[in-house]
Length: 176
Image (cartoon, rainbow, N blue to C red; front, side, top):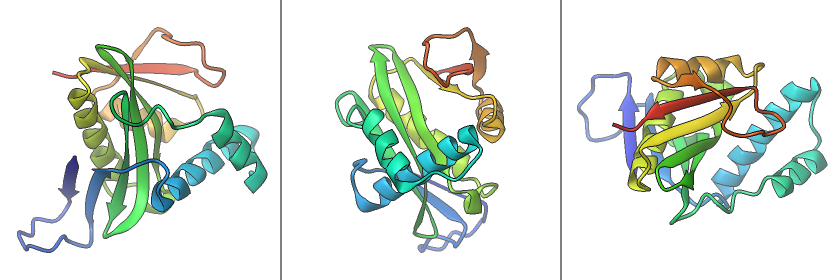
C-alpha cells in the first residue's frame, strides 16, 4: 500500500518537500518503534498531565502489544513527510466485516500538513484490503485534534462498542 498526497501541484518525478508517503511497514522497524513510543509518550503524558518516563513507555508498549497489526488480521503503516517518519497507525480486524483503527499518530511538528488525512486514507485502504465493510475506533475526550480529524473525514460518533479503560468516544465509518 502506498498512498501519496501533496499540497503542491507539481508533476515532477521527485516528491515535493510537502508530500506525504504512507506505506505498510512492520510495527517493529526502527522508524515504526520510534513512532509508537512517541505516540504512547504523548497520549500517556496528556492523560497523566506530566512527562512520561522511558520505563513507563516500555511498560505501556508491553501492556498493549502491536502483534495483532500484522497480516492476515491487521496492518501497520508509517507516514513520511519529505522522507522523515512523522506519522503512524494501525488497523486490525475485530470481526470479518469490522476493522478498528489504533495508534493513529502524527508528530506535533507535522500537524496541519495533511499527514492525518494521508494516514487515514492509507489505513482505510488497508481495512478494505482486509475485507472490512466498516472501520471503528475509540478515543478520549482530551484528544480533541484526533476527534476533529475523524469527524472531518466522515467518521460519526456511535454508541460504545468496547469497554476500554480510556475509551470515551467511539466512531465509525462505512467502507463503501
